[in-house]
Image (tube, rainbow, N blue to C red):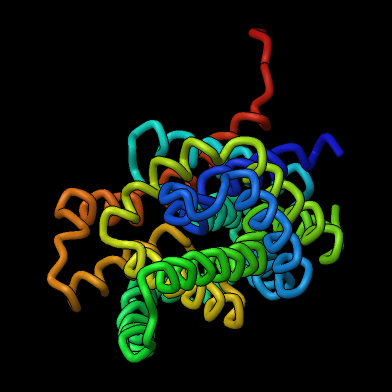
Length: 314
């Protein structure tokens, strides 16, 4: 159990941070209470992890061969990277941190599945593009239906409330299905867990992070999303969930935050909203470039350091 602590901590931090992408708009606009949102999100994360988490695990564990010690090193290196990026104020991708750490160990092992790595990197590039694409489609479809429906203001508010909660629940499901691989895939690769145990442990740890430590992040990010308007916030959440779910079918864990940024940019193109500033886009780009590289470096340094041996002077 001790060897899994790094992965459990990584799952906890992932849940604490990424829950904001699911229910931030609904909670900050008081359409749903935090504890209700947190419990719903934790439940659907676990369901998504158990139902569809296996594909991403198979992809990540196939990037290189790992011992149990190296699996622990990957988890610690990814966790340190997430922490460092958070301190720097950059939008962090746990998926990129984990893959970067695995690549670092793969370099030391002189064994990397380049075909699998190419598939992962291409999906990273496609994540914000997918978010923008789905945002445009979802916005046009929902706007057409919404404008045709004869609703009073009270009915419209109730409908948006219901749809935000529904979209957040779906987003939680896709978060568990897609990102559980980041938490425990390395332990499957090392033979410490089977796929079912990995999805269960990973789903529970992500849910624990949502329930125990996501309140402040949900409130902060929610206000940032809701400043556009409730309808656009709904589109962002749904577009992010659809994007992440699409890559779940491909079997590649991706960043929910980058999908959200892509979705907001997509809405901006449609409505001319200055939703994403140049500095924000620059930070996203820097994080995209730096996160896997930093994780690779951490993994190499940690693995090299634990094998140093003190040689007394002759």
